[in-house]
Image 1: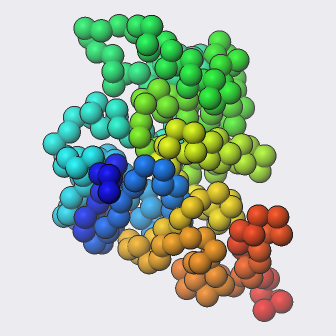
Image 2: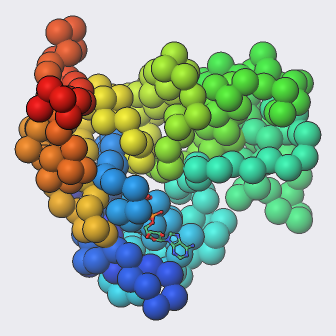
Amino acid sequence: MNVPIISASNISSGYGERVVLHDISMEVRPGDFYGVIGPNGSGKSTLLKTLTSIIRPISGRVHLFGRDIVELSPREVARKIAVIPQEVSILFPFTAKEIVAMGRHPYIGRFRREGPFDREVIERSMTDTDTWRLGDRYIDELSGGERQRVVIARALCQQPEALLLDEPTSHLDINHQVEVFELLTDLNKKRNLAVFVISHDLNICAEYCRELIIIKDGRICLRGAPEEILTPETVREVYEAEVSVLRNPRSDAPVVTVVSRGTQ
Ligand code: ADP
């Protein structure tokens, strides 16, 4: 079997004295499409940060293509994996194209300027995310959905093997949520890009992700195909919420729907 992109073995992680994640082992392989779900504060973002070397594990190891991630420079990491954090703060009014071009930083240094190949990657990343036509627009003048596609285009410029996103659709309406997940599906299929996406939207994860990882109290409490693990019992146990789980008549994906206290 090929080497995993990311491999975490028995990692514990946290902030200062505070241990948030306990003994997590998992792998991200080419073509994977993971949805990471779980209650607020359960450790999902901390897992993403640990897998991508934003924070160091307290114990255990993370390997990137078989090499211990702590031995790699940020540039080396950024050539293999791209992270889209929850809040992408873009302070200055750059154009969409300037923002996307920043994704080439891991390849361009003091001694090498942007060349024809970089420009080709920038154009392809923008075409694949349907942002090429927005190139000259200022980022702060774009809609939330357009801005998110620009941020994904910037990540693609890193030519990553895996894309890890922290709640990329939390501020978007349903149409734009679908647009982002359709784009991720497309990239996953066409480029074999591994996707690891944290989301609170169980239904959108069930519809699009091949596998779900449920985090509770800093541990992986369940993982598997959405239709196998999204049950009323699981949701009750993980979220302490009473729900019904139906099937989408068109896709057959599970659909979680709340049950009001009066009906229970
Ligand atoms: P989730 O993404 O599942 O909502 P997080 O990984 O963000 O959960 O947070 C897990 C726990 O770690 C929470 O209790 C949170 O308060 C704590 N935490 C997150 N970030 C920090 C930080 N920078 N410093 C200290 N504690 C943090």
